Image 1: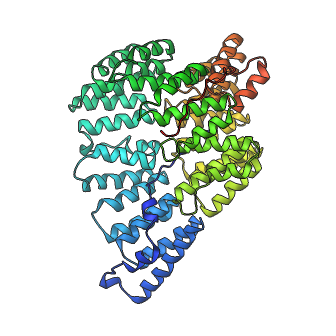
Image 2: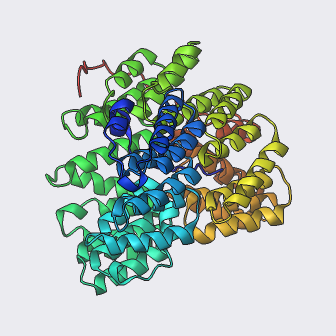
Image 3: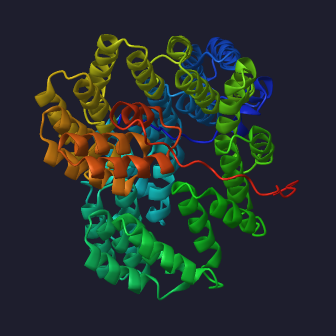
Length: 574
């Protein structure tokens, strides 16, 4: 499975609301730098940057912002310019702007943070590490919060890669070590998470919080006894009541997890969380009647209502009731599930022949933040590709890349769509370029290795690339899937089955299920292959790779047929 890149960037919508003329008029130039020529050139560059941003030309905007900051030595402008260029994924310009900002405001946290973001965006880990250590020297306390903030905005994988080898006394507190343990677990390195947990306990961190992280880490590794022991400890406090069930699911013990969640439904401290997990389990197993009942019950819980409405929309869609699905998805505007609802809405509209309306649903408004507009372009291209319009999707991505040259996420997606459009050589060339530019990025190494393996090219190198990615994220199911697939391509069926079974245990994904079943089939375990495909069809019935694989080997297998819908209850708000 080609791993998607996700460079999460600072929110900049509030900054975008600042009128250009107000911003320029409010600048106060230091006497030493207030030459009228510089100010005039800076003002022209700033105006050009804002105009370029309005028309979605991130590349031109980044160049103009950089010029404006150089001519106008003002921290407020540098802050805005850094935010805009980061949101555009124009990391070299963002880095130059942040460095200039640091000269304007030496010893302050904000430019150091922006500089760290830019370097993580470029996967320049050594430079990012140096500036993060300088940032720790500026920020007086709460390094744990800083770690969380950095991971949220710059992404888990590069943040963990930066911090993995850092030994700084300011990160040795119990809270900081717990933050690092959480980061390692989210970054799919369970062994590293356990080392941080032990350090956190030594530093006096909460033993039950540490146990909750350790339980999940042991479960990821398949260490059932240790995972169960830690989960019991975590469950002694209200916040950890769900940990045993979560651990059972990670271990692949679905029946035991189901029983535990049923037991917790009446627990006032964990009942709501248990009900959410039960609804998800019913959907993943294709039991839509039970899923509908559980989701409907969740609507009464204000915290769970958006999730419940999304689930009900998904159930209706899988039953073929597009009218109810669209109604439910529309109710999620402004909620935390709006993005998922918009994606599902667009899929339905496209299926109904409303192509232009589907694309409009995903396209961000012209006054949206740059990162929102980029995400909209990527989502629209993904929709087109999923619908079989690969060339149109590729054209859209290439247009986006011209407006945001060098943006790593768009560049990566261009390689993906080249491959899907049947241009394997061009896709591999694009991935080779990205790999040269970002050799430490495991997502790129995995994508290149997987694509080589999928096209049966240079399999030894493909395996080496995937294993290099796994060195950074040894428990990532997407990477384990890639390893299993290259082993399958090399005829090592037993080894492939082992890796793919673990990948599916950690991620019930249709692509992984397709590969797992195919490896089982090649290993002579045809009954097990059918069972694996049947499970994957229930969890991911719309997956095209899975459908094509099942059609080749076991065409009589089908996704579970949804039962008729219950009489829909009115849902006018959430």
